[in-house]
Amino acid sequence: MTKYIFVTGGVTSSLGKGIIAASLAKLLQARGFRTTIQKFDPYINVDPGTLNPYEHGECYVTEDGAETDLDLGHYERFLNTYTSQANNVTTGRIYQYVINKEREGAFLGKTVQVIPHITDEIKRRMTLLGKDNKYDIIITELGGTVGDIESLPYIEAVRQMKWEMGDENALVVHLTLIPYLRAAKELKTKPTQHSVKMMSEHGLNPDILVCRTEEPLYKDLKRKIALFCNVTQDAVIEALDADTIYGVPLEMMSERLDEICLQKMNMPAGKEPDLNKWKEFLNKLRYPKSKVTIGLIGKYVELQDAYKSILEAFIHAGAINECKVEIRNIHSEYLTPENAREKLQNLDAILVAPGFGHRGIEGKIDAIRYARENKIPFFGICLGMQMACVEFARNVLGMANAHSTEMNPDTHNAVISMMEEQKNITQMGGTMRLGAYDCELKSGSKAAGIYGSTRISERHRHRYEFNNEYLDAFEKAGMVPVGTNPATGLVEVVEIPEHPFYVGVQFHPEYKSTVENPHPLFVAFVKAAKEAQEKRNGHNHPIFQDSVAEG
Ligand code: GLN
Image 1 (tube, rainbow, N blue to C red):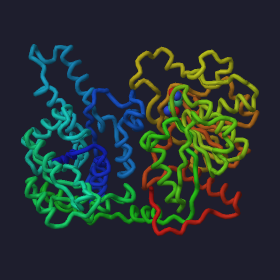
Image 2: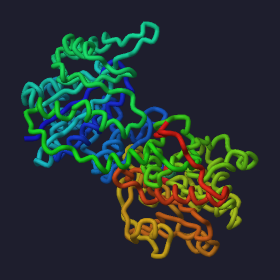
Image 3: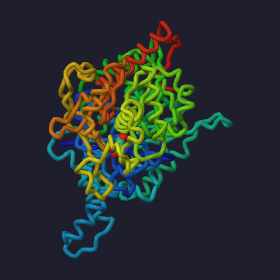
Image 4: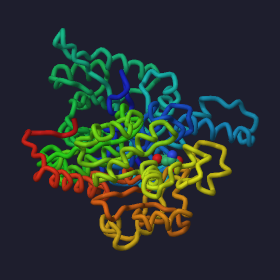
């Protein structure tokens, strides 16, 4: 029988529930249990695809084309397994389903209510992945904070599941905060007590408390937390602030979070977790030998979470290159032909980010021109690739007003235009070209060399595409479409073979980079940055500090 672990959050948001859930899943997986993670989000958007990155950070995309919460990215990066549409459910999706059923008459004249209809649908979705015995353990992260009005139906659904399945089959791990008051020089347990009390008012008691803290929890304090929050003493887990999120699984292992969960679920401990590969990665991450600086050109750069998967992919690629990747965020809105040199000249490589809409677009084009003309390693992702084509059309092919029809519907040189199948779509949510598609790479191309293969599959999220009327003109002038979709002929990868590293991709490689499988394009790009630096300075920027993980 599949066992369920629910991860809830208390006191405040941003405690890192996703990372704790992913770390626990990693440890259980490393013990040999078939584990997956899902996230239930209490907002009314049907999925985060329609949310601005300023609202909710990056929208993550799965193989099957679901637009999901960015925590699913952490799950995949930690577990090295794919998630799917079923792994992310929102209140909007639940209500949409229940309301559609009501319209079909499926409730036979009954009054449709939060309890039982919404909570039943939550429970049905929570157990969906457990249906065909694919998993031993399913971890469910509940978005939001206990005490939020919109979280109530989820708390009630979990309460019912615990009652129906028994505590040993449905465990609650509550992530909470133990603040340190500097003036009093004391760790405070009261906010945690209150959040547990609030949960118990709704009939749900946590089995395990994971306590985020800046200072170690001493033994008496753990006892006090256990006593007042009604959990066993071994179930108070310390989660000290970590230097990198990738250190958290090991931290949780030394606190025995996985073992205590298994004990409480009456499960055997399984084999000792084999985390050797993980530790090797961490070691390389913490003790790099050199450093490169890469410019990330985008319009959401002030927001840490907006380009989450790209930043994580750089961490994976940096570690394997034994090189710290320092990201310099450059706001494309403030980049002009006049200041491009000043802002970009000290970079070892330039990445132009994905995005939508007109704002900041000319700055991206200026950055691309600078990278192309000055032979700085360049990597363009989705909109970044599209703007690379626009830049090339304008400045090499002499089409002064070339553009994407997304930004200029009236351009005479629509080198990027809307895909045919997108033209009649009027609904915004879930209607882009989404998820994994095959791509055929020309043998002998840089991309084929990097992947070590001519047939690849990558994830997409876009409406516009390279306009194939311009294929010949581009190729003759030196920008080669080296990757195309075998079924549709859509251009997926462009390169400038003349340039030391100039690759634009219509897809999003960042979604598939994991700790165990750093993405080859990011690995090659970081390597190219190192080489460019060495060429410029005669050597690589050395690093002598003891530990320089993310920071
Ligand atoms: N706005 C572009 C499109 O829709 C690029 C999307 C992206 O960068 N993800 O095609």
